[in-house]
View 1 (tube, rainbow, N blue to C red):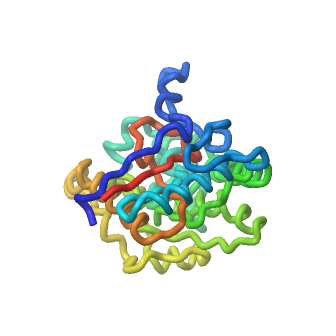
View 2: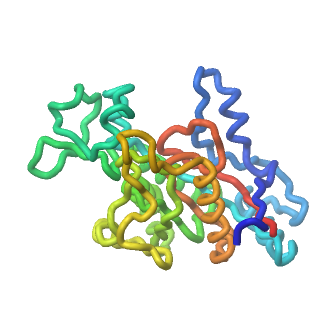
Length: 307
């Protein structure tokens, strides 16, 4: 695996999220969820004739199946739903403390409420304590609401537009992603009579800083909190990727090159081991795109891998 693989986005199937953000009238362009994840309606695929009774999603499913059947052993296609976690504790604290976040607070695991400025939103406190924790931050009420809205939209699109549920749902091991995954997909799978069992992937994480919000809980803790999840082979109990700061700064942080290599390895692993042609990834930031994305969104791409 590795150097012989090339990934590309298949154009003209979904609206271009990046150009859509750039055309936004607001000063800081952001990527947001599009209706039906931005699938281009009325698009004719050259591999399969369409029928009037088929929805655009049903046509796309047939198209991707045809591509995978006839493209040879060195080419593979998948449709990928990419979900970003909802608003979390560390986001609320970050807004409250401003520039002091990176200077003072990001390397701590939490604080007493009276140590911080007044927070604009309620955040969950440790049981029996007037203390909040943002190490492996969990969702706040707004973040849960964002994920629930996505779940409701997914159910609607599935019923009315034939949008398929992913064959496999992958999630980052960070709590905010595990919570988001559950809120987006659990009801949709249940209503369709399907077994909901997300797969926890270690490499499905944003670029690793030394901030404690990027450190995950132990596997044992994740299993206790999210018994519906399964784990990739060799998923370790303790977090071996995250490293604490050595000097209160960015020492030991993951480099951009290391981050790209890790994400590429993640995609290669999924393409090599998963036969599902539609999969979902729940992450903390954008996977393939440099534009800022709103929290609690879903994007969609059709990816091609060559070797």
